[in-house]
Amino acid sequence: MADIESTPPRPPIDYPDPILHDAWTGSSVRELRDARDDLTRAKARYDEAVCAARRKCLSWGQIGTILGVSRQHLHRRYRGLVD
Image 1 (cartoon, rainbow, N blue to C red):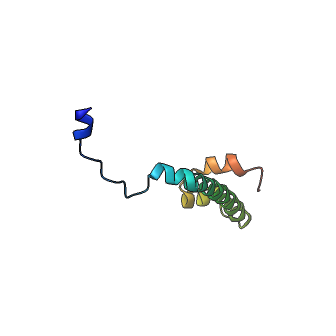
Image 2 (cartoon, rainbow, N blue to C red; image 1 turned 30 degrees about the vertical axis):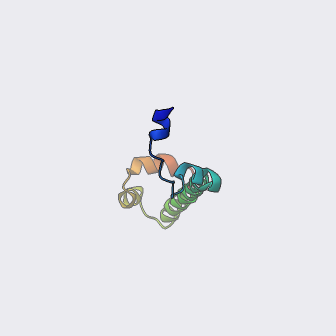
Image 3 (spheres, rainbow, N blue to C red; image 1 turned 90 degrees about the vertical axis):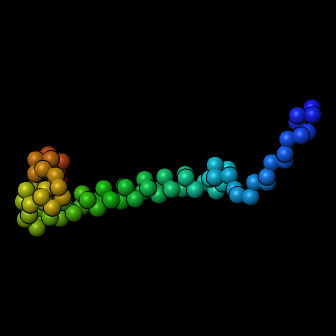
């Protein structure tokens, strides 16, 4: 008991616990939902841009060069949507 009583008191915690703060505010959950929604919108925009480029007569090779993917990949993915 003497050892317990002789230990110096702990300093007060003057900063919020980041885990409790996140649990109370839900910031991680909100951030994940926003990222998911952003990704869904980005995929739809990507698809529409590829289809619009094909409708304007850009070749699969030209589109692939701009996007950094192979023309074969684009053709396999979008051939049913355009052409």
